[in-house]
Amino acid sequence: MTYDNTLKYLVEQYPEDFVRYLLASEATDIQILKTELNQEPIRADSVTFLQTANQILHLEFQTLPASTPPLPLRMLDYWVRLYRQYNCDIEQIVIFLKPTTSETVFVDQFTARNTSHHYRVIQDPEPLLLSPGLLPLATLARTDSPQSLLQQVAVQVSMIEEAATKQSISVCTQLLAGLVFEPELIRQFLRIEDMRESAIYQEILQEGLQEGREQGIEQGRQSELRLVMRLLNRRLGSINSQLQSRLQELSLVQLENLGEVLLDFASEADLMNWLNRVEA
Figure 1 (cartoon, rainbow, N blue to C red):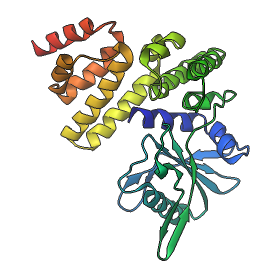
Figure 2 (cartoon, rainbow, N blue to C red):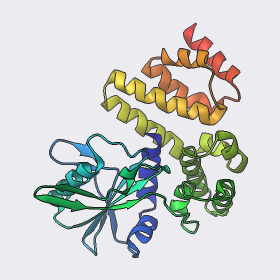
Figure 3 (cartoon, helix red, strand yellow):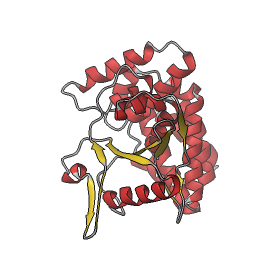
C-alpha cells in the first residue's frame, strides 16, 4: 500500500516526466483523472489525460506477478471502463517493481475465444536520473552494482534546488528503495530526517489509513499493521518476535498513533517504552 501511494503521488506531481518517459512525447495540457472507474467500483493506480492528443495514459504498478483476478483480465476490465467513460485512445502500461524470474511478467495480453487485448509491460524501469519525478523508480532498475546506483540516485536527489521538491523526492526514493535495499544501506545515502519533516510522508500515510478504513475495521487494522511494520523495519531494522507479537495486539487507533510517532524512535527500546505506555 505504501509503495502504491508513493507512486500515485509521483505520477500526479510529475505527470510530464512519466509522459516523456513512457510515451516519448512532450505534453503540458495534462489532466489527472479520477482513478475509481464506473460500474462496480475498481480503482486504477494512475490515470492521466493528455488533452491535445485526446489520449489516456493508464499505469498499473505491480510488486508481485500474482494477481486476483489475473492481471491480463484486470487490464482488459480497466480498458473497457475507461473507454466507455472517455471514448478515446488509451495507452496501458504495467510496471513491475521487483526483479523476478516468473514467466507471468512477460504476459502482455488477455486472450479469450472472441477477445484479444494488448498492453505494455515494463519489468525493470531504467534509471532515469535526469527527471526528478522518476528518480525514485531508478532505485528499482536492474544493475550489476546496486549500491553504486543507489548512491548515484542520492547524489541526483541532493542536486535538486527547490527544497520542498528535494524533500518529497527523497522521501519517495527511500520508500521505493525499501523494496530492494536494506534499511542500513538506504540510511548511508539518504537523510532519514526527510521522512519526519516531509508533508508527503504524512499524506501517503493518511491515504493508506483511509484505504484501510474503507476495507473494514479488521482489514483496515491488518493493512495498517503491515504499513507500520514496514516503517519500523525501515527505521529500526528487524523487530524481535516478542515486540512483533505485542504489535499484533494493537487496535487500529493505536496503530495510527504509532505511525505518527515511530520516526522519532532511535532504537527498539523507544518502541518498547511506547508500547509500555500504551498498554499501561
